[in-house]
Length: 475
Image 1 (cartoon, rainbow, N blue to C red):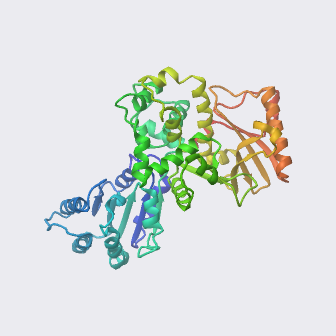
Image 2: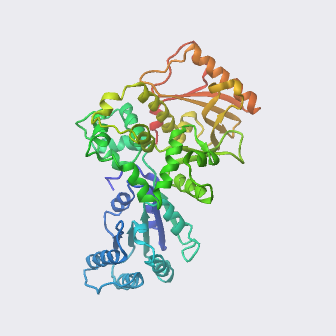
Image 3: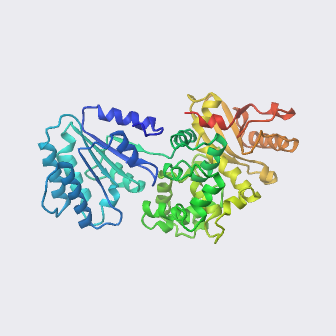
């Protein structure tokens, strides 16, 4: 387990199921490249009673052949050609029963959505095996895994048939936090300070596979050029591959993501239908739910609106970068990032990307504010006063149960952030409009979230609390 970075909650859960003394059925899911298989293999040191992984786009016959090969290797025996999944699982049952090994029998079935192709009857055979045998065997620890989060939730976790309520534990594996990326960089011997880690994070997000491709001999501009802008770039086509691996009819999901990428503040469901040109109907709602389950978007109600006008916002940093600089750009410059990463367009993107980083680290912000144990709701807020124009929009409002509201201003800079006279006036107006329109009786605080803290001047006294980049690296 020495190779595992972070994942403390997941490791604790795996220790718990390993020692429970009861049959366990664990579902592990999360987006492509997030490290699901790596976590399970490293935790168990690749020592499984049986391990089998599905193959992408393989026929049922090929999947069964691969199962047969894995079976023969693990149990050191030759078996006849498998004709069905029912026979395959019956063979597995018999061989587990023959085993003289005491204690846990760890069965790991990886990339399950690829195995359960249409007409294969895999789910039915698997369901029968679990219900008739494994669920009553206290030695069995079954782990199933898949990148297609929507499939895993629909077919396994929320199954309405024979697997209903059979899952005993689930792990929704998320991308790394900033701190976990820092620890990963240390493991990879990448000499990066926290400012550089933030810059990479705003492009790559917290997906370990992407970070693994950073070359420690190159600076950030060169690494990003190599990953995205050369003919042989590793991640040049990754955006499409992500959605193809997760969803059927992936082009529809991509349309939704593109629409949300164009309107940074987010869109309501009706607005999404207009922007994406997709037919209105229940499928839009389902696709939005699945994108949120996979961590690409978030949904929230604007402050004070709890029952209607839910807003959907793209928060996946990798997708935001791709849509800003690669999608439909027809760019042939292999040194694009090196030549342009300090332009006004890129600075504008950095400011917005930093806001999204903050939204992905709300527990760390709460920790800095000393309210980790306080129940909170967070949202955004936009003035309905047309005269306020663009001055009355707040992207992060933390509504606390201790009768305080934090209005958070998020600012990316390469040095200490200075509140000017003009910006101070803008903050004062936002504060006044917010308290007037919302009629809140709670105490309202202004919180500044910056990269390097605030420069002390006359206007700093109007800020009740500060959070900086180092605070986002906690945990």
